[in-house]
Structures are given as C-alpha cells and as structure tokens.
Amino acid sequence: MRVVTNKKLARRNRKITNYLFFGTFGALILGFVVINASLFTNDTPDTLTLLAQSAVLPAAFVLTIVSVRMTNLWARAPRPENAIKDGLKGLSNKSVIYNYYHFPARHVLICPQGVFAIVTRWHDQKFALRDGKFRSKKNLISKVFSAIRFDGIGKPFREAEMAREHIQRAIDEVAPEVNVESLIVFVDPSAEVEFESSPEVPVLYADPKRSPNLKDYMRDAKRQLSEAAGDAKNASLMPLSDEQIEAFEKATI
Image 1 (tube, rainbow, N blue to C red):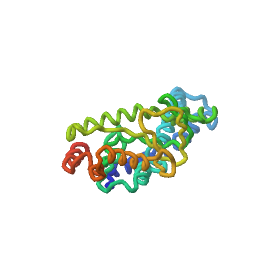
Image 2 (tube, helix red, strand yellow):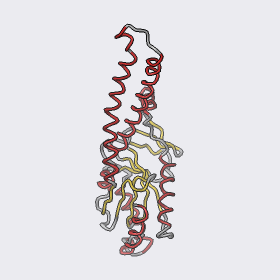
Image 3 (spheres, rainbow, N blue to C red):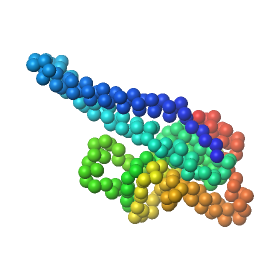
C-alpha cells in the first residue's frame, strides 16, 4: 500500500502544539503575577492593571482549550496515520491512502474494495452507540471535566457525511461512476464502543485485535465483491485506473 502523508502540515501543527503548550504555562504564570500584583506592591490597582487582570484568565483559558485540542489531533499517540496503516496491513499493494490533504476528510483510501473517506477518533473512553449517537459511559465527574476541556466526541456521523460528500465531488471529476463511502475509525486501542443499534456508517477499530476492525471490514468487502463478480481476479481491480488516480492527485494534492 502506498502512503501519501502531508508531512509538512503534520510537522507544522506539531510545532504549533508545542508552542501552545509552553505558551499556556506562560500565560498561567503571567496571570498569577498580574492578578496578585497588588499583593506584592501594596498599591491599589489602576485601570490598566484591572483590565489586564480581567483579560489574562480568559486568555489563558482559551489557550488551554486550543492547546489540548491541538495535542489530541496532532501529537497524541497513536498517530491516526500510523494506526490506520497498521490496521490495513495485508491490503493490496495497489492501494493508496492519503493523510491530511483532503479536509474535512483527514484520510482517504483508494483500494480494490472502493474509495473511502475516513474520519478518526482519538478517544480512549467507553461509549454506547444508540440511535446514531455516541453516549459516553464516564461517571459524572469525568463528564464535567471532559466538558470543561471541550474534548467530547463531537458528531462523527455528521463529519463522516461531510467528508464523504467532499471526496465524492472530487472523485466525480475523474470517475463519476465511482461511489465514495465513509468510515469512522477509533485509533486508540483502549477505546470501546457498545453497539446498542446498527450505525448508519461503519464504526471500526484500527486495532486488528478488536472487533469490528478495519482489516476484517476490508476482507469482508473483498469477499463480497468476489461473490458479486463471480471472479476473485475482478474483485482485485482498483475502482480507479492509474490515470484517474493521477488526475485525482493532481487536482487535490
């Protein structure tokens, strides 16, 4: 499998994450000094000091939220591109996956099984999936801290549909007969989903030791294609020709 990763973007965002991490600490220290300045000087705070005191804590709070979100997306292990690559071991060597080129689709896979827009989740929590919604199984205190950090799971099904539509428009330019599918993949091996209802979009684990996982999904998809085509050789054909893949890359990368 060929892996094409926007390494420049990934490196840049990891650097920004590091800067935000240290910047957050600096803002918190500055906030402590500014807020307690009058204690050190025994002077009555002037208007400028009061304005600074009222602004520094909100600024530090915003920096903290942004830093945490950037860390989860760009620095947290396992990295999604690595987890997906490991989860797809054994996939046809004709396949290609693109990482961080086609936002809102962070990962796009073209393989004999089809074209997939992949939305990932880094969360290591336990969820119950019911009626198209992920419900955290954390206790109340953990849910409160999660809300403060703004690290909820969001709306993965909505994101998956947006990602699919975006890639479908791009694919239509080179292969209008090809339908794009979407997948939601949990990359952390500690994640756990209890399926209380069938999801509208496949929800998978990157870890091949879990079920349902990305590797088994692709294996089952290939078997279904083989049965439908009545020929295993035809089931191994790519949905896009080399020329179409090249045109897709030129138009989107």
